[in-house]
Length: 291
Image (cartoon, rainbow, N blue to C red; front, top):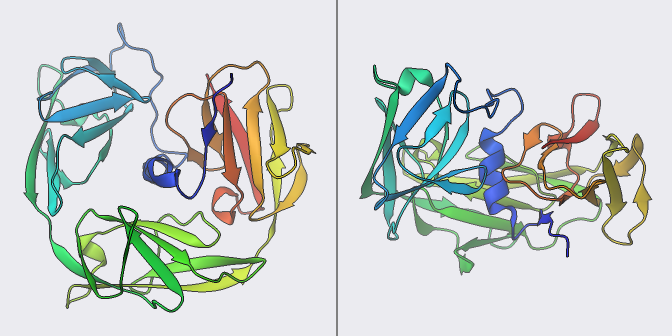
């Protein structure tokens, strides 16, 4: 049976995390290891840290290439704590850490050392209009004014979305950094988003849906509407909120790119709900992949 990656509100966590750092234009590895002048060695404590490349766990001591994306997870972080990472001389708080390999992070012998310390997470209050918005942490509903920790993922959902409208979310009066859903938002608590009183206010407005043009190479990609299986042609127009299924014609698992967003891991197919975020300035969403 074919397996495909499904992009949904529930399953979007990894994709959202990924896409934030996978916007097209960021340096990407050629994937050639060995004999590559930019090949480096990665060292970390496997008892504390898990590292993945293209969805596959790699070991400490593995060779990595300049520009490659790696995902580091600290093992067994308790609630109320956050991982503080040191990569070379760079320090960053994140759970997980998305990292593009940089030669400048390596020592003179070409080794990149990754360390992780578990720190107390800063605490904030999350504020939103509970009559209009439902918020959940770890799939448990939380109320406006609840205390949350730096690094927590909160899922916001409009209780009664207006038909043919798209939510536009703000975090303390600034646009949400990654907003691809029609009536919901996945948000990671960040210290920089809080006001002087330690509050993070989540609001939204609604805008009209727009039509987008879907483009893909039909010799390599086939596309159907998820609702009824109707075939979708390249260069056809579709309203935001339409969910489309893409699959490789040859049945191979590949790394997909939907507009400006690339997804981690290889899959035969991918489902996506159309949103302006994916489109270029002309409203075109180009779907392609690399093997």
